[in-house]
Length: 554
Image (cartoon, rainbow, N blue to C red):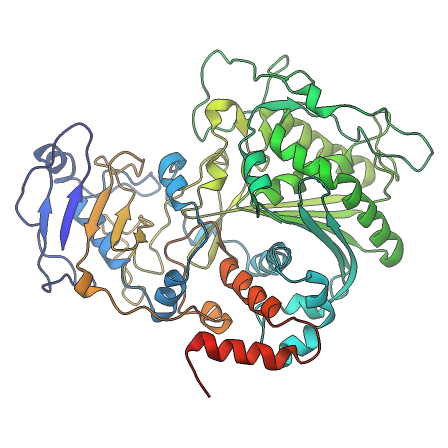
């Protein structure tokens, strides 16, 4: 194989092959041999660094160690190869390379792992965030869960058998989809909001100019009073220029008199608000109905991608007070349960720092005045570029100050002050750093504290390690593997393949959260739709379609 270092400051130069690596290094075209093209400047910058002190950020990683980690990550399981061969949707890994930034903190370790019970709850909530993307009526999935289970279809979504249907919401202008169900086993009312799924949504995603946030502007209240309508489109304002652009990754709390974007409550992404506005009344009406019919103990709001941003806007409307005081019936006219959980996956930034501050004030006031509890889980995954946009340079900030980071089936708590970063180093403790998990690295070695998070992209393995070891974009290590060394690809994977513990989702991306493949779910619902599910004899048509897809002729 051929290894390169891209460096904008110096040209690639031929160099001697690196020293022999450990036995877990992935074999090249001719076993154990490689030719490295590394500039003299890069060799001087990485050739003689000692192990970092305990508790410090791992920088200056030896270049050969980076190459070893990247090469080792190319060892995909059959399940992983099958899954990646089936990819058709954009996972925004390219966006992560362009806009993503590595956090300036020590590598995440087992100490930052989320408690098993919490991780399980988040994964279960993630099922709802994925089900809303169904290409068949999602209501039919819930109503026919027993038959689907008998046919061994969608076994990764057991919540289908735990819920009572409440209502579907469909935006008349923007075609945004959401649904509300009551989960009997946990006594939760669950609201799931879809992310982008058509051209209309994509266009709104690009409308990053902010407008003033004014909650409840078109929502009637149970006391008969109606807030005066506001033409939100006329409220669009240009972002106020800051004295200096914010530092990427820095958590910003607005000071008094800080940027307001035309309103003291802050500025919101125009496109996201437009999408929310289209489903706002439907969502609030369905929540009101669900609370009346089922008296839930907790309200759960969830969404993937842009759906996560809409979930935050809905949450702020629900928690908005009447006349400055929180009451049993809020400004939306809904008597909320005393527990609320907001869980998002791969959500972009939604507003400016003033809006973030307003959100936290709403939460704090509601918890204090109502003796309520709000739990917030914002999950971002390795190589998912969506949480990196809109950029901080445009004045945007994330709502959650302690997000969670998903990497290889594990969930980590992000350190304080690092909420704006989209990428994090992960410790090799308990597993090899980017290599063979059956051969853990020596914790005293220089490479042990760092998981390079190498991305295998087709026949190119890209490891985000710059010449100074900082992991920042700019210099990319490329490992061009021989086509002869690539294994044969298999047909599209099944649900069983996805759920296999052998699948660790090493490339990361936007559609791989909670140990599941969202694209595979959508393919499965496409097949159900082709079989005219849930009409009579759909099972036979589904099996026949499965045989044709597998090339079996009987």
